[in-house]
Image (cartoon, rainbow, N blue to C red; front, side, top):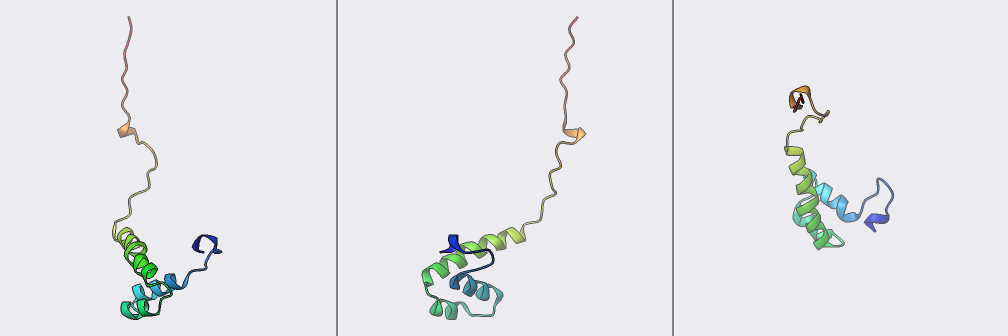
Length: 79
């Protein structure tokens, strides 16, 4: 079902997980009302943990390609 949904739509478990992460709904209450508590627990453990870790890591500067300090030339002359 998740793969066939249109952009912007979400499953019931996705919305409950979002509410739990935002602090609007308590975890126990969300799990008790989920259509699939197992899917909700998986989503909380995986989807939101990965997003949280990515948000905590500092952004790296965009790689614009090699700079002149990174280029080395090996010049050989023949006589």
